Length: 631
Image (cartoon, rainbow, N blue to C red; front, side, top):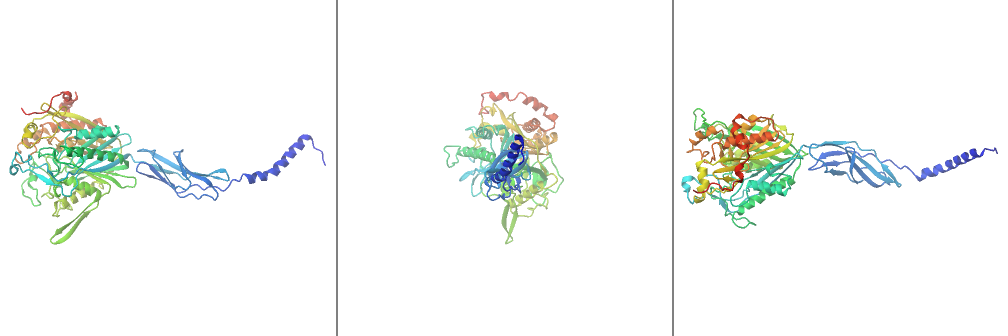
Protein backbone atom coordinates (compact mmCIF):
# COMPACT_ATOMS: atom_id res chain seq x y z
CA UNK A 1 0.00 0.00 0.00
CA UNK A 2 1.47 3.29 -1.03
CA UNK A 3 2.29 5.82 1.56
CA UNK A 4 0.80 9.37 1.24
CA UNK A 5 1.69 12.47 3.14
CA UNK A 6 -0.64 13.37 6.01
CA UNK A 7 -2.30 16.24 4.16
CA UNK A 8 -3.18 14.09 1.17
CA UNK A 9 -4.53 11.33 3.43
CA UNK A 10 -6.97 13.84 5.07
CA UNK A 11 -8.25 15.11 1.72
CA UNK A 12 -8.79 11.61 0.38
CA UNK A 13 -10.72 10.64 3.52
CA UNK A 14 -12.98 13.70 3.24
CA UNK A 15 -13.73 12.93 -0.38
CA UNK A 16 -14.66 9.36 0.46
CA UNK A 17 -16.99 10.47 3.28
CA UNK A 18 -18.68 13.04 1.01
CA UNK A 19 -19.22 10.45 -1.68
CA UNK A 20 -20.79 8.06 0.79
CA UNK A 21 -23.12 10.67 2.33
CA UNK A 22 -24.30 12.34 -0.91
CA UNK A 23 -27.07 9.81 -1.68
CA UNK A 24 -28.31 10.04 1.89
CA UNK A 25 -28.59 13.86 1.69
CA UNK A 26 -30.40 13.70 -1.63
CA UNK A 27 -32.98 11.32 -0.31
CA UNK A 28 -33.51 13.42 2.88
CA UNK A 29 -34.32 16.68 1.02
CA UNK A 30 -36.33 15.89 -2.13
CA UNK A 31 -37.30 18.90 -4.31
CA UNK A 32 -40.76 17.50 -4.93
CA UNK A 33 -43.01 18.08 -7.94
CA UNK A 34 -43.37 21.60 -9.36
CA UNK A 35 -46.56 23.64 -8.84
CA UNK A 36 -48.01 24.85 -12.13
CA UNK A 37 -48.53 28.57 -12.63
CA UNK A 38 -52.16 29.60 -12.10
CA UNK A 39 -54.13 30.11 -15.30
CA UNK A 40 -57.18 32.09 -16.46
CA UNK A 41 -56.63 35.18 -14.32
CA UNK A 42 -59.37 37.73 -15.06
CA UNK A 43 -59.80 41.24 -13.62
CA UNK A 44 -63.21 42.94 -13.85
CA UNK A 45 -64.69 46.13 -12.46
CA UNK A 46 -66.96 45.41 -9.49
CA UNK A 47 -69.30 47.73 -7.61
CA UNK A 48 -66.54 49.34 -5.54
CA UNK A 49 -63.65 46.97 -6.21
CA UNK A 50 -61.61 45.10 -8.78
CA UNK A 51 -62.87 41.52 -8.81
CA UNK A 52 -60.29 38.85 -9.69
CA UNK A 53 -61.08 35.27 -10.71
CA UNK A 54 -58.96 32.38 -11.99
CA UNK A 55 -59.06 28.68 -12.81
CA UNK A 56 -58.65 26.16 -9.96
CA UNK A 57 -54.98 25.38 -9.34
CA UNK A 58 -53.94 21.74 -10.02
CA UNK A 59 -52.00 21.12 -6.81
CA UNK A 60 -49.68 18.04 -6.87
CA UNK A 61 -50.61 15.29 -4.46
CA UNK A 62 -49.08 15.76 -1.05
CA UNK A 63 -48.87 19.53 -1.22
CA UNK A 64 -49.96 21.15 2.03
CA UNK A 65 -50.63 24.66 3.37
CA UNK A 66 -51.64 25.85 -0.08
CA UNK A 67 -52.38 29.50 -0.78
CA UNK A 68 -52.75 31.97 -3.62
CA UNK A 69 -50.78 35.19 -3.29
CA UNK A 70 -52.16 38.28 -5.06
CA UNK A 71 -49.95 41.11 -6.27
CA UNK A 72 -51.09 44.47 -7.62
CA UNK A 73 -48.58 46.44 -9.68
CA UNK A 74 -45.74 44.32 -8.31
CA UNK A 75 -46.66 44.57 -4.61
CA UNK A 76 -48.35 41.78 -2.65
CA UNK A 77 -51.78 42.89 -1.39
CA UNK A 78 -53.18 39.68 0.07
CA UNK A 79 -53.58 35.93 -0.10
CA UNK A 80 -56.42 33.39 -0.07
CA UNK A 81 -56.55 29.63 0.57
CA UNK A 82 -55.28 27.47 -2.26
CA UNK A 83 -58.73 26.20 -3.19
CA UNK A 84 -60.04 29.75 -3.77
CA UNK A 85 -60.69 31.05 -7.27
CA UNK A 86 -61.54 34.70 -6.56
CA UNK A 87 -60.43 37.81 -4.69
CA UNK A 88 -61.80 41.37 -4.44
CA UNK A 89 -59.49 44.34 -4.18
CA UNK A 90 -61.42 47.22 -2.60
CA UNK A 91 -58.39 49.48 -2.08
CA UNK A 92 -58.84 51.15 -5.45
CA UNK A 93 -60.50 54.31 -6.68
CA UNK A 94 -61.72 56.01 -9.84
CA UNK A 95 -59.59 56.47 -12.92
CA UNK A 96 -56.82 54.09 -11.87
CA UNK A 97 -55.14 51.38 -13.98
CA UNK A 98 -53.78 48.25 -12.29
CA UNK A 99 -52.03 45.04 -13.31
CA UNK A 100 -52.49 41.90 -11.23
CA UNK A 101 -50.63 38.56 -11.05
CA UNK A 102 -51.18 35.62 -8.73
CA UNK A 103 -48.76 32.97 -7.49
CA UNK A 104 -49.47 29.55 -5.99
CA UNK A 105 -47.54 28.65 -2.82
CA UNK A 106 -47.48 25.63 -0.51
CA UNK A 107 -45.30 23.07 1.27
CA UNK A 108 -44.13 19.67 0.08
CA UNK A 109 -42.21 17.38 2.41
CA UNK A 110 -41.70 20.32 4.78
CA UNK A 111 -40.12 22.47 2.09
CA UNK A 112 -41.80 25.55 0.50
CA UNK A 113 -42.81 25.28 -3.12
CA UNK A 114 -43.81 28.23 -5.31
CA UNK A 115 -45.21 28.40 -8.80
CA UNK A 116 -44.24 30.83 -11.48
CA UNK A 117 -46.56 33.85 -11.55
CA UNK A 118 -49.69 33.78 -13.65
CA UNK A 119 -50.09 35.73 -16.83
CA UNK A 120 -50.96 39.32 -15.84
CA UNK A 121 -54.46 40.80 -15.95
CA UNK A 122 -54.88 44.55 -16.35
CA UNK A 123 -57.97 46.62 -15.58
CA UNK A 124 -58.90 50.24 -16.22
CA UNK A 125 -61.24 51.66 -13.58
CA UNK A 126 -64.00 54.06 -14.67
CA UNK A 127 -63.72 57.73 -13.82
CA UNK A 128 -66.83 57.94 -11.65
CA UNK A 129 -68.76 56.44 -8.76
CA UNK A 130 -72.52 56.77 -9.27
CA UNK A 131 -75.40 55.87 -7.00
CA UNK A 132 -79.16 56.25 -7.21
CA UNK A 133 -82.10 55.73 -4.89
CA UNK A 134 -85.81 56.46 -4.46
CA UNK A 135 -87.99 57.09 -1.41
CA UNK A 136 -91.78 57.19 -1.35
CA UNK A 137 -93.40 60.55 -0.47
CA UNK A 138 -97.01 59.66 -1.21
CA UNK A 139 -99.52 61.23 1.21
CA UNK A 140 -102.60 59.35 2.31
CA UNK A 141 -106.21 60.21 1.60
CA UNK A 142 -107.56 63.35 -0.04
CA UNK A 143 -105.12 66.25 -0.29
CA UNK A 144 -104.94 69.69 -1.86
CA UNK A 145 -103.69 69.54 -5.41
CA UNK A 146 -101.51 72.40 -6.62
CA UNK A 147 -101.15 74.31 -9.82
CA UNK A 148 -104.49 75.32 -11.28
CA UNK A 149 -106.60 78.31 -10.34
CA UNK A 150 -105.96 80.03 -7.01
CA UNK A 151 -106.76 79.52 -3.34
CA UNK A 152 -108.28 76.81 -1.21
CA UNK A 153 -111.85 77.73 -2.12
CA UNK A 154 -112.52 79.75 1.04
CA UNK A 155 -112.14 83.18 -0.61
CA UNK A 156 -111.96 82.90 -4.40
CA UNK A 157 -114.98 81.12 -5.93
CA UNK A 158 -113.81 77.93 -7.58
CA UNK A 159 -116.01 78.52 -10.61
CA UNK A 160 -114.19 81.82 -11.17
CA UNK A 161 -110.56 80.84 -10.65
CA UNK A 162 -110.78 77.24 -11.85
CA UNK A 163 -109.17 75.82 -8.77
CA UNK A 164 -107.55 72.41 -9.17
CA UNK A 165 -109.21 71.33 -5.93
CA UNK A 166 -108.58 68.25 -3.84
CA UNK A 167 -107.59 64.86 -5.14
CA UNK A 168 -107.41 61.32 -3.91
CA UNK A 169 -104.29 59.18 -3.78
CA UNK A 170 -105.52 56.19 -5.77
CA UNK A 171 -102.60 53.99 -6.66
CA UNK A 172 -99.91 56.26 -8.07
CA UNK A 173 -96.81 56.50 -5.86
CA UNK A 174 -94.91 59.78 -5.94
CA UNK A 175 -91.28 59.75 -4.86
CA UNK A 176 -88.13 61.60 -4.01
CA UNK A 177 -85.55 60.45 -6.55
CA UNK A 178 -81.81 61.04 -6.20
CA UNK A 179 -78.57 60.62 -8.14
CA UNK A 180 -75.06 60.98 -6.65
CA UNK A 181 -71.89 61.29 -8.76
CA UNK A 182 -68.29 61.28 -7.48
CA UNK A 183 -64.91 61.42 -9.20
CA UNK A 184 -63.18 60.00 -6.12
CA UNK A 185 -62.33 63.45 -4.79
CA UNK A 186 -65.57 65.47 -5.10
CA UNK A 187 -69.20 64.44 -4.98
CA UNK A 188 -72.45 66.02 -6.16
CA UNK A 189 -76.10 65.06 -5.73
CA UNK A 190 -79.18 65.90 -7.78
CA UNK A 191 -82.63 65.05 -6.42
CA UNK A 192 -86.22 65.64 -7.45
CA UNK A 193 -89.49 65.74 -5.51
CA UNK A 194 -92.73 64.91 -7.28
CA UNK A 195 -94.70 67.76 -5.75
CA UNK A 196 -96.11 71.04 -7.05
CA UNK A 197 -93.13 73.04 -5.83
CA UNK A 198 -90.77 73.33 -2.88
CA UNK A 199 -89.15 76.30 -1.17
CA UNK A 200 -85.59 76.75 0.01
CA UNK A 201 -86.95 77.47 3.49
CA UNK A 202 -90.35 77.31 5.20
CA UNK A 203 -91.88 79.74 7.66
CA UNK A 204 -93.00 77.19 10.23
CA UNK A 205 -90.03 74.85 10.42
CA UNK A 206 -86.66 73.67 9.02
CA UNK A 207 -88.07 71.53 6.23
CA UNK A 208 -86.94 73.39 3.10
CA UNK A 209 -84.63 72.25 0.34
CA UNK A 210 -81.77 74.21 1.89
CA UNK A 211 -82.38 72.43 5.21
CA UNK A 212 -82.42 69.03 3.50
CA UNK A 213 -79.03 69.66 1.90
CA UNK A 214 -77.58 70.83 5.22
CA UNK A 215 -78.84 67.66 6.95
CA UNK A 216 -77.25 65.39 4.34
CA UNK A 217 -73.94 67.24 4.67
CA UNK A 218 -74.08 66.88 8.45
CA UNK A 219 -74.97 63.18 8.36
CA UNK A 220 -72.19 62.36 5.90
CA UNK A 221 -69.56 64.34 7.77
CA UNK A 222 -69.00 66.78 4.93
CA UNK A 223 -68.27 64.08 2.33
CA UNK A 224 -71.16 65.55 0.35
CA UNK A 225 -71.19 69.32 1.04
CA UNK A 226 -74.50 71.15 1.15
CA UNK A 227 -73.54 73.44 -1.73
CA UNK A 228 -72.88 70.35 -3.88
CA UNK A 229 -76.52 69.26 -3.58
CA UNK A 230 -79.28 70.41 -5.95
CA UNK A 231 -82.85 69.48 -5.03
CA UNK A 232 -85.79 70.42 -7.24
CA UNK A 233 -89.49 69.72 -7.51
CA UNK A 234 -91.08 68.43 -10.69
CA UNK A 235 -93.89 71.02 -10.50
CA UNK A 236 -96.62 68.49 -11.12
CA UNK A 237 -100.02 70.14 -11.36
CA UNK A 238 -101.57 66.92 -10.09
CA UNK A 239 -99.40 66.66 -6.98
CA UNK A 240 -99.49 67.87 -3.38
CA UNK A 241 -99.63 71.63 -2.87
CA UNK A 242 -96.40 72.13 -0.97
CA UNK A 243 -96.50 75.85 -1.90
CA UNK A 244 -99.65 76.78 0.03
CA UNK A 245 -101.41 78.79 -2.67
CA UNK A 246 -103.99 76.04 -3.26
CA UNK A 247 -104.73 75.12 0.34
CA UNK A 248 -101.38 73.62 1.30
CA UNK A 249 -100.53 70.42 3.15
CA UNK A 250 -100.31 71.74 6.71
CA UNK A 251 -103.02 69.50 8.17
CA UNK A 252 -102.39 66.28 6.23
CA UNK A 253 -101.71 63.43 8.69
CA UNK A 254 -98.80 61.05 8.15
CA UNK A 255 -98.28 57.83 10.07
CA UNK A 256 -95.46 58.17 12.57
CA UNK A 257 -95.50 61.98 12.54
CA UNK A 258 -97.41 64.16 14.96
CA UNK A 259 -98.86 67.65 14.84
CA UNK A 260 -99.32 70.10 11.99
CA UNK A 261 -96.94 70.04 9.01
CA UNK A 262 -96.45 66.30 9.40
CA UNK A 263 -96.24 65.91 5.64
CA UNK A 264 -93.37 68.40 5.36
CA UNK A 265 -91.46 66.54 8.06
CA UNK A 266 -92.11 63.29 6.23
CA UNK A 267 -90.89 64.64 2.87
CA UNK A 268 -87.80 66.07 4.58
CA UNK A 269 -86.88 62.71 6.07
CA UNK A 270 -87.60 60.76 2.89
CA UNK A 271 -85.60 63.12 0.69
CA UNK A 272 -82.61 63.00 3.02
CA UNK A 273 -82.91 59.20 3.02
CA UNK A 274 -83.03 59.03 -0.79
CA UNK A 275 -79.87 61.15 -1.18
CA UNK A 276 -77.97 59.31 1.54
CA UNK A 277 -79.00 55.93 0.13
CA UNK A 278 -77.82 57.04 -3.31
CA UNK A 279 -74.50 58.03 -1.74
CA UNK A 280 -74.19 54.65 -0.02
CA UNK A 281 -75.07 52.87 -3.28
CA UNK A 282 -72.28 54.46 -5.33
CA UNK A 283 -70.40 52.11 -7.59
CA UNK A 284 -67.92 52.37 -10.43
CA UNK A 285 -69.52 53.79 -13.54
CA UNK A 286 -68.91 55.14 -16.97
CA UNK A 287 -71.16 58.02 -18.01
CA UNK A 288 -72.47 58.87 -21.45
CA UNK A 289 -74.52 61.88 -22.49
CA UNK A 290 -76.30 63.15 -25.56
CA UNK A 291 -79.35 65.04 -26.74
CA UNK A 292 -82.27 64.73 -29.13
CA UNK A 293 -84.25 67.52 -30.75
CA UNK A 294 -87.95 67.44 -29.79
CA UNK A 295 -89.34 70.98 -30.35
CA UNK A 296 -92.52 69.55 -31.85
CA UNK A 297 -93.66 68.16 -28.47
CA UNK A 298 -93.91 71.53 -26.66
CA UNK A 299 -95.24 74.97 -27.51
CA UNK A 300 -94.36 78.53 -26.57
CA UNK A 301 -97.31 80.02 -24.69
CA UNK A 302 -96.64 83.47 -26.12
CA UNK A 303 -96.52 82.40 -29.77
CA UNK A 304 -99.21 81.58 -32.31
CA UNK A 305 -98.26 77.90 -32.06
CA UNK A 306 -100.15 77.95 -28.76
CA UNK A 307 -103.31 78.22 -30.88
CA UNK A 308 -102.56 74.87 -32.50
CA UNK A 309 -102.71 72.46 -29.58
CA UNK A 310 -104.65 69.86 -31.53
CA UNK A 311 -103.62 67.65 -34.44
CA UNK A 312 -105.55 69.74 -36.94
CA UNK A 313 -104.49 73.41 -37.00
CA UNK A 314 -106.95 75.82 -35.45
CA UNK A 315 -104.83 78.75 -36.55
CA UNK A 316 -103.68 78.38 -40.16
CA UNK A 317 -102.21 81.87 -40.35
CA UNK A 318 -98.58 82.98 -40.36
CA UNK A 319 -96.37 82.13 -37.41
CA UNK A 320 -96.28 84.99 -34.93
CA UNK A 321 -94.22 85.27 -31.77
CA UNK A 322 -93.61 88.38 -29.71
CA UNK A 323 -91.34 86.50 -27.27
CA UNK A 324 -89.60 83.81 -29.35
CA UNK A 325 -87.61 80.97 -27.92
CA UNK A 326 -88.22 77.57 -26.38
CA UNK A 327 -85.87 74.80 -25.37
CA UNK A 328 -86.98 71.88 -27.52
CA UNK A 329 -83.87 69.79 -26.80
CA UNK A 330 -84.19 66.68 -24.67
CA UNK A 331 -80.93 66.09 -22.79
CA UNK A 332 -79.98 62.68 -21.41
CA UNK A 333 -77.23 61.25 -19.21
CA UNK A 334 -76.77 57.58 -18.39
CA UNK A 335 -74.40 55.95 -15.90
CA UNK A 336 -73.42 52.32 -16.54
CA UNK A 337 -71.65 49.82 -14.31
CA UNK A 338 -68.66 47.66 -15.23
CA UNK A 339 -70.89 45.15 -17.00
CA UNK A 340 -72.56 47.87 -19.06
CA UNK A 341 -75.83 47.82 -17.11
CA UNK A 342 -77.59 51.11 -16.44
CA UNK A 343 -77.28 52.44 -12.91
CA UNK A 344 -79.40 55.47 -13.69
CA UNK A 345 -80.88 57.05 -16.80
CA UNK A 346 -81.35 60.78 -16.29
CA UNK A 347 -83.10 63.30 -18.52
CA UNK A 348 -84.42 66.85 -18.49
CA UNK A 349 -86.94 68.44 -20.84
CA UNK A 350 -88.79 71.74 -20.98
CA UNK A 351 -92.35 70.43 -20.74
CA UNK A 352 -94.48 71.74 -17.88
CA UNK A 353 -95.73 68.89 -15.71
CA UNK A 354 -99.25 69.49 -16.99
CA UNK A 355 -99.37 66.65 -19.53
CA UNK A 356 -101.81 64.69 -17.36
CA UNK A 357 -102.91 61.15 -17.94
CA UNK A 358 -102.46 59.85 -14.42
CA UNK A 359 -104.91 58.55 -11.87
CA UNK A 360 -105.65 60.79 -8.89
CA UNK A 361 -102.61 62.38 -7.27
CA UNK A 362 -99.45 61.87 -9.36
CA UNK A 363 -96.15 63.37 -10.47
CA UNK A 364 -97.22 63.87 -14.11
CA UNK A 365 -94.84 63.08 -16.98
CA UNK A 366 -91.61 63.24 -14.88
CA UNK A 367 -92.94 60.49 -12.62
CA UNK A 368 -94.24 58.35 -15.45
CA UNK A 369 -91.11 58.74 -17.54
CA UNK A 370 -88.83 58.03 -14.55
CA UNK A 371 -90.65 54.74 -14.10
CA UNK A 372 -90.50 53.92 -17.81
CA UNK A 373 -86.78 54.72 -18.02
CA UNK A 374 -86.12 52.06 -15.41
CA UNK A 375 -88.77 49.41 -15.98
CA UNK A 376 -90.15 50.04 -19.45
CA UNK A 377 -93.76 50.80 -20.28
CA UNK A 378 -96.58 48.52 -21.40
CA UNK A 379 -100.20 49.51 -21.74
CA UNK A 380 -103.14 47.78 -23.41
CA UNK A 381 -105.91 50.02 -24.78
CA UNK A 382 -109.32 49.11 -26.11
CA UNK A 383 -109.50 50.65 -29.60
CA UNK A 384 -112.51 50.01 -31.84
CA UNK A 385 -113.35 47.01 -29.70
CA UNK A 386 -109.88 45.48 -30.01
CA UNK A 387 -107.08 45.26 -27.46
CA UNK A 388 -104.02 47.10 -28.68
CA UNK A 389 -100.81 46.81 -26.63
CA UNK A 390 -98.13 49.50 -26.69
CA UNK A 391 -94.77 48.66 -25.20
CA UNK A 392 -91.28 50.14 -24.92
CA UNK A 393 -88.36 48.58 -23.00
CA UNK A 394 -86.66 50.29 -20.07
CA UNK A 395 -82.95 50.51 -19.36
CA UNK A 396 -82.92 48.92 -15.90
CA UNK A 397 -81.45 50.57 -12.83
CA UNK A 398 -83.33 53.70 -11.79
CA UNK A 399 -84.82 56.54 -13.82
CA UNK A 400 -84.86 60.25 -13.04
CA UNK A 401 -86.71 62.73 -15.26
CA UNK A 402 -86.70 66.42 -14.37
CA UNK A 403 -88.09 69.73 -15.56
CA UNK A 404 -85.89 71.86 -17.76
CA UNK A 405 -86.57 75.39 -19.01
CA UNK A 406 -90.31 75.29 -18.36
CA UNK A 407 -90.88 79.04 -18.24
CA UNK A 408 -93.31 80.03 -20.98
CA UNK A 409 -93.65 76.52 -22.45
CA UNK A 410 -96.26 73.80 -22.20
CA UNK A 411 -96.42 70.21 -23.50
CA UNK A 412 -98.49 69.12 -26.46
CA UNK A 413 -101.18 66.92 -24.89
CA UNK A 414 -100.05 64.83 -26.64
CA UNK A 415 -100.16 66.15 -30.22
CA UNK A 416 -100.01 69.68 -31.61
CA UNK A 417 -100.63 70.61 -35.22
CA UNK A 418 -96.86 70.89 -35.74
CA UNK A 419 -95.99 67.57 -34.04
CA UNK A 420 -94.17 65.18 -36.35
CA UNK A 421 -96.19 62.11 -37.38
CA UNK A 422 -92.97 60.10 -36.94
CA UNK A 423 -93.47 60.13 -33.18
CA UNK A 424 -94.71 56.69 -32.05
CA UNK A 425 -97.50 58.22 -29.97
CA UNK A 426 -98.84 60.41 -32.77
CA UNK A 427 -102.04 58.40 -33.30
CA UNK A 428 -102.34 56.87 -29.83
CA UNK A 429 -105.62 57.99 -28.21
CA UNK A 430 -104.45 57.68 -24.59
CA UNK A 431 -102.51 60.75 -23.44
CA UNK A 432 -100.16 59.08 -20.97
CA UNK A 433 -99.30 56.28 -23.39
CA UNK A 434 -98.70 58.72 -26.23
CA UNK A 435 -96.29 61.09 -24.52
CA UNK A 436 -94.44 58.28 -22.74
CA UNK A 437 -93.79 56.61 -26.10
CA UNK A 438 -92.74 59.92 -27.65
CA UNK A 439 -90.36 60.91 -24.87
CA UNK A 440 -88.80 57.44 -24.64
CA UNK A 441 -88.05 57.55 -28.36
CA UNK A 442 -86.09 60.77 -27.92
CA UNK A 443 -84.26 59.46 -24.85
CA UNK A 444 -83.11 56.46 -26.86
CA UNK A 445 -82.09 58.68 -29.74
CA UNK A 446 -80.04 60.87 -27.39
CA UNK A 447 -78.15 57.77 -26.22
CA UNK A 448 -77.40 56.51 -29.72
CA UNK A 449 -76.90 59.43 -32.10
CA UNK A 450 -73.96 61.56 -33.21
CA UNK A 451 -74.16 63.72 -30.06
CA UNK A 452 -73.67 60.75 -27.74
CA UNK A 453 -70.26 60.60 -26.10
CA UNK A 454 -68.52 59.34 -22.99
CA UNK A 455 -68.11 61.89 -20.22
CA UNK A 456 -64.68 62.38 -18.67
CA UNK A 457 -63.30 64.97 -16.31
CA UNK A 458 -63.73 66.34 -12.80
CA UNK A 459 -66.77 66.67 -10.57
CA UNK A 460 -67.32 70.08 -8.99
CA UNK A 461 -70.10 72.35 -7.73
CA UNK A 462 -70.78 75.82 -6.38
CA UNK A 463 -73.72 77.84 -5.10
CA UNK A 464 -74.38 81.50 -4.57
CA UNK A 465 -77.17 83.56 -3.06
CA UNK A 466 -78.80 86.38 -4.97
CA UNK A 467 -81.32 88.91 -3.73
CA UNK A 468 -84.17 90.50 -5.67
CA UNK A 469 -86.87 93.01 -4.74
CA UNK A 470 -90.41 91.63 -4.72
CA UNK A 471 -92.10 94.04 -7.12
CA UNK A 472 -94.55 91.74 -8.88
CA UNK A 473 -97.93 92.91 -7.52
CA UNK A 474 -99.51 89.45 -7.43
CA UNK A 475 -96.53 87.85 -5.68
CA UNK A 476 -96.31 90.73 -3.22
CA UNK A 477 -100.03 90.44 -2.47
CA UNK A 478 -99.70 86.71 -1.85
CA UNK A 479 -96.81 87.31 0.54
CA UNK A 480 -98.60 90.01 2.47
CA UNK A 481 -102.29 89.05 2.32
CA UNK A 482 -102.31 85.43 1.17
CA UNK A 483 -103.19 83.90 4.53
CA UNK A 484 -106.38 85.96 4.59
CA UNK A 485 -107.44 84.72 1.14
CA UNK A 486 -106.73 80.99 1.36
CA UNK A 487 -103.53 81.51 -0.64
CA UNK A 488 -100.87 81.58 2.04
CA UNK A 489 -97.34 81.27 0.67
CA UNK A 490 -95.54 78.97 3.09
CA UNK A 491 -92.05 80.21 2.22
CA UNK A 492 -90.00 81.71 5.05
CA UNK A 493 -90.65 85.41 5.71
CA UNK A 494 -87.60 85.61 7.97
CA UNK A 495 -84.08 86.86 7.39
CA UNK A 496 -82.06 85.92 5.40
CA UNK A 497 -84.70 84.53 3.05
CA UNK A 498 -86.75 87.72 3.17
CA UNK A 499 -85.69 91.15 4.39
CA UNK A 500 -88.11 94.02 3.96
CA UNK A 501 -89.56 93.57 0.50
CA UNK A 502 -86.53 91.70 -0.84
CA UNK A 503 -86.16 88.00 -1.24
CA UNK A 504 -83.06 85.79 -1.30
CA UNK A 505 -82.74 82.69 -3.44
CA UNK A 506 -80.16 80.19 -4.64
CA UNK A 507 -78.22 79.93 -7.88
CA UNK A 508 -76.20 76.78 -8.50
CA UNK A 509 -73.91 75.03 -10.94
CA UNK A 510 -72.76 71.41 -10.86
CA UNK A 511 -70.18 69.81 -13.08
CA UNK A 512 -69.62 66.24 -14.26
CA UNK A 513 -66.77 66.35 -16.75
CA UNK A 514 -67.88 68.47 -19.69
CA UNK A 515 -71.54 68.44 -18.58
CA UNK A 516 -73.00 71.40 -16.69
CA UNK A 517 -76.16 71.40 -14.58
CA UNK A 518 -77.39 74.98 -14.10
CA UNK A 519 -79.99 75.39 -11.37
CA UNK A 520 -82.78 77.92 -11.85
CA UNK A 521 -84.86 78.53 -8.68
CA UNK A 522 -88.22 78.65 -10.42
CA UNK A 523 -89.82 78.20 -13.82
CA UNK A 524 -86.89 79.54 -15.81
CA UNK A 525 -87.20 80.81 -19.36
CA UNK A 526 -85.18 79.37 -22.22
CA UNK A 527 -82.79 82.32 -22.49
CA UNK A 528 -81.33 81.58 -19.03
CA UNK A 529 -79.84 78.29 -20.16
CA UNK A 530 -79.09 79.64 -23.61
CA UNK A 531 -77.11 82.51 -22.13
CA UNK A 532 -74.99 79.99 -20.24
CA UNK A 533 -74.53 77.79 -23.34
CA UNK A 534 -73.42 80.76 -25.41
CA UNK A 535 -70.71 81.77 -22.97
CA UNK A 536 -69.23 78.53 -21.62
CA UNK A 537 -67.57 75.57 -23.30
CA UNK A 538 -69.69 72.61 -22.18
CA UNK A 539 -70.86 69.67 -24.25
CA UNK A 540 -74.28 69.75 -22.56
CA UNK A 541 -75.94 72.34 -20.35
CA UNK A 542 -78.89 70.95 -18.41
CA UNK A 543 -80.99 73.93 -17.28
CA UNK A 544 -82.94 72.55 -14.33
CA UNK A 545 -86.15 74.25 -13.30
CA UNK A 546 -87.44 74.74 -9.74
CA UNK A 547 -83.97 73.96 -8.41
CA UNK A 548 -83.29 74.71 -4.71
CA UNK A 549 -86.32 77.05 -4.55
CA UNK A 550 -89.57 77.96 -6.32
CA UNK A 551 -90.00 81.65 -7.10
CA UNK A 552 -92.52 81.32 -9.91
CA UNK A 553 -91.70 82.37 -13.46
CA UNK A 554 -88.18 83.64 -14.08
CA UNK A 555 -88.91 85.69 -17.19
CA UNK A 556 -85.84 86.36 -19.30
CA UNK A 557 -84.65 88.42 -20.98
CA UNK A 558 -86.09 91.35 -19.05
CA UNK A 559 -87.31 93.00 -22.25
CA UNK A 560 -89.92 90.22 -22.53
CA UNK A 561 -91.65 91.35 -19.35
CA UNK A 562 -93.84 94.12 -20.85
CA UNK A 563 -94.96 91.84 -23.68
CA UNK A 564 -95.87 88.98 -21.33
CA UNK A 565 -97.58 91.43 -18.99
CA UNK A 566 -99.84 92.44 -21.88
CA UNK A 567 -100.88 88.79 -22.20
CA UNK A 568 -101.98 88.49 -18.56
CA UNK A 569 -105.55 87.61 -19.54
CA UNK A 570 -104.42 84.37 -21.21
CA UNK A 571 -100.92 83.80 -19.79
CA UNK A 572 -100.25 83.72 -16.03
CA UNK A 573 -96.46 84.03 -16.35
CA UNK A 574 -96.43 87.69 -15.33
CA UNK A 575 -98.70 87.08 -12.34
CA UNK A 576 -96.21 84.75 -10.68
CA UNK A 577 -93.09 86.78 -11.45
CA UNK A 578 -91.10 88.21 -8.52
CA UNK A 579 -89.33 90.93 -10.47
CA UNK A 580 -88.56 91.88 -14.08
CA UNK A 581 -84.84 91.23 -13.62
CA UNK A 582 -84.78 87.97 -11.70
CA UNK A 583 -84.41 85.79 -14.81
CA UNK A 584 -81.41 87.71 -16.13
CA UNK A 585 -79.94 87.82 -12.62
CA UNK A 586 -80.16 84.02 -12.29
CA UNK A 587 -78.58 83.55 -15.73
CA UNK A 588 -75.63 85.75 -14.81
CA UNK A 589 -75.21 84.06 -11.42
CA UNK A 590 -75.25 80.60 -13.04
CA UNK A 591 -72.74 81.75 -15.63
CA UNK A 592 -70.39 83.09 -12.94
CA UNK A 593 -70.65 79.80 -11.05
CA UNK A 594 -69.93 77.77 -14.20
CA UNK A 595 -66.70 79.70 -14.69
CA UNK A 596 -65.88 79.30 -11.01
CA UNK A 597 -66.00 75.51 -11.21
CA UNK A 598 -63.62 75.37 -14.13
CA UNK A 599 -65.52 75.70 -17.39
CA UNK A 600 -63.80 77.76 -20.05
CA UNK A 601 -65.73 80.84 -21.14
CA UNK A 602 -66.48 84.44 -20.33
CA UNK A 603 -69.07 86.58 -18.59
CA UNK A 604 -71.65 88.13 -20.89
CA UNK A 605 -71.43 91.94 -21.09
CA UNK A 606 -75.09 92.17 -20.09
CA UNK A 607 -74.14 90.65 -16.72
CA UNK A 608 -72.02 93.60 -15.61
CA UNK A 609 -74.74 95.22 -13.42
CA UNK A 610 -75.41 91.89 -11.67
CA UNK A 611 -71.72 91.19 -11.13
CA UNK A 612 -71.40 94.56 -9.43
CA UNK A 613 -74.54 93.95 -7.38
CA UNK A 614 -73.42 90.51 -6.20
CA UNK A 615 -69.78 91.44 -5.52
CA UNK A 616 -70.32 92.47 -1.85
CA UNK A 617 -72.05 89.16 -1.15
CA UNK A 618 -75.40 89.53 0.59
CA UNK A 619 -75.10 92.25 3.24
CA UNK A 620 -78.84 92.12 3.97
CA UNK A 621 -78.57 88.48 5.02
CA UNK A 622 -77.71 89.43 8.60
CA UNK A 623 -80.37 92.11 8.98
CA UNK A 624 -82.86 90.90 11.60
CA UNK A 625 -85.90 92.14 9.71
CA UNK A 626 -88.72 89.89 8.53
CA UNK A 627 -90.12 89.75 5.05
CA UNK A 628 -93.20 91.38 3.54
CA UNK A 629 -95.89 91.91 6.17
CA UNK A 630 -99.42 93.19 6.10
CA UNK A 631 -99.33 97.02 6.12
